[in-house]
Length: 470
Ligand SMILES: [Zn+2]
Image (cartoon, rainbow, N blue to C red; front, side, top):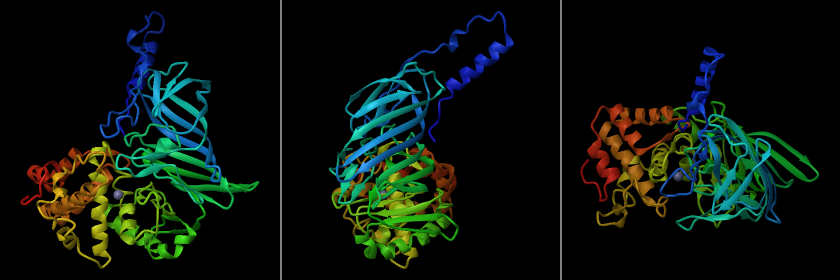
């Protein structure tokens, strides 16, 4: 998890000691006096300059809403539990959702205003560093569809029978206020009320499902830290099935009935994929698993929503393997800056390669050599994008995926299978629920292999051009 500022706690502890040591005559200590200022309006990620916020750390989101698909209307109350990391007289949340009817902080009504995706809040009383506080935001209306720099859509996407809800890289503020950057992970609880013919499927485990007066409330609990973009509550008519892996991880799948027959063979392999990746990457990082398979043709992609990847159409087996691999690489081990997206996509794509080989298809070496990968001509525009800086328009283009996966396969050849697979496991274990950078990976690879890999990574990750020697 992101390093938390302990300044407030340390100051408080220091005051305590001073007070008890000098009970009668101690003058007020000046260094403990709060110095209030506004939290930063973002975390400064150049790809999405408004994402995230400074001055506090979110610990938990409780998102309760009812949704009427016919009217496309949500009526919601989001409760955010956070800890101030500086003395705050103002802070921002990220929110692009419908009109807010009330906002309180520790039950005191708080003034707020909205500018773009910033929800600027003025807490009164002010918040001292180190204190935990609770923000309750009530809002109602139609949550928006968000269009990304590459023209794909995300956020709250209405479907024929509900809503499809992917959040990468900036869709979460469509339906709940928060600190929308992967560096501020938190736990989540969802209470979703929908017409009783529908199912609302969230991350984590189903705590309860109760129907009254024609509406059903589903309560989902995501107990491991989660990046905001990985949250979903996707709603529709679903065929639900519950099973478990051989090692006992519960699996909840929700499949649109019209896609059931086309998805069945892929869904049946989910336990095998989890078991195989667990043997290579280390233990599955979450308490539950599953998938949501829906019809959202305007979305046209899948996303590795934590514990339950979401698919906008019937997935093939390698796409399922890709999204499950992300549970280790992307979801549990998350990037710290969007420019490092290859750490998500290169790993998940390489996982597809090795799953395909394991499943009796092309070997990873054959996939590396193929026309769509290293077989591309040196003159191809493909080689002119730097893997570690694709830009916000091409962050989900071919390079972070394919050149990222090629980088890992080339690294495997360079350091040998034993060191490579030890590296994959250590990367997942050491940074579980945390945030990482490319520099961290380079350092880890050199440590595990005992080799100087600077020129290797230079040609694969930091330079344009088709690598010819490494
Ligand atoms: Zn992916």
